[in-house]
View 1: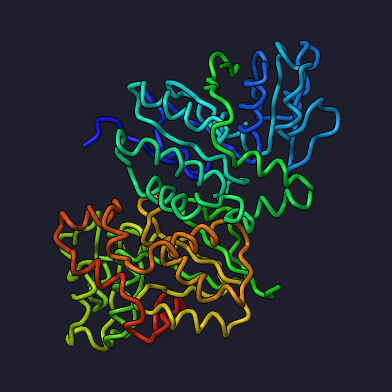
View 2 (view 1 turned 90 degrees about the vertical axis):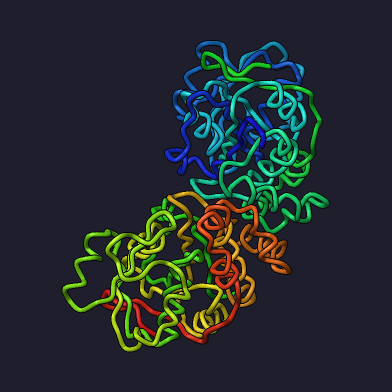
Length: 235
Length: 235
């Protein structure tokens, strides 16, 4: 029996069932908030400040922040950046601070308040996060951002991929880690084909961001572990 | 494009996200409430009245009802019947009324109030329910009872099995029907093996009800469609 445990909250709407005290929470919004954050920090952004509300985020322009705002898959008018990871591979952002708000991802971060440690997870830094979790003593909760309160495929698959890496060291606490793991087992040999019917991939395909989706499903592009401390995410 | 749609609510805690007006809701609690109800009605019980609260259910003794009460997998003191389907294959129950309350299943029924039609689903009557749904004009919502608000494997697998039977006639509305379907694809060749690690199966194994679990995972034992009308479930 493993001495640490792992659980998965499939949408922020269920977070009242999962106590976070003393835990490390891994927040994941594969398409595309946490994939963007991982990419940005790996490419030299100094820090990312997440905001649940658009207006709070936009106001950070006055404090010399770049602002990133997405709602319903599209960049919001007035913001410097949207929600494509490729926008964050930009030398002009090196050493800069970014204020960030998205439909689901930053809301999920807000729901993790009170956790011992809050980590930003994505396929892009899958192994780095797994390695970090195996080092700390905390029990782990993976929080899937989902889509407007509902469960989505891509975040659940990430949860399954992370559980797979940790299952020898962590005991699953309920059925959600198992369901995620089994779903990932069925998907992992061709994630892009598996995802082609998902509601968010179809939504994004209409917005012409197929390249984003493919990139966001790629494991281990970056060896970084973004951690939220004092309101800002840094590596 | 199918003209009817199908959705899956993975736990009653998410029901506020799923409008039920005009829909047929299929309530499922495989281990073991809806499996028991299906069995009881197939074996001649006249009707089943679901209660969310133990005391309301027990009070029905005074109205000449048999009472069935389960909490945390065990029969509750003072009730006539527990939550094993084999208890309901009893000639003494033929033509009788049963008042029923369980940890999750009857709570899920309560959350379906307002639906156009409320159906009781289980593997035991899988094809009968699928056939019924293909005949009615309503969109369909499968409501998984889960375990104390959390997602469970067995109800999600049932949702996947039912989606598989209907996917040519119904358009999935979000990712939950897809996730359920893919999970079921990975499980269907050996459901008992797949389920052996699930939290509820392990819970029930301690209570020595392995035979119940095996029976509840068996498809198409009964050709009945239990429907809730005016507070009572009948076929």
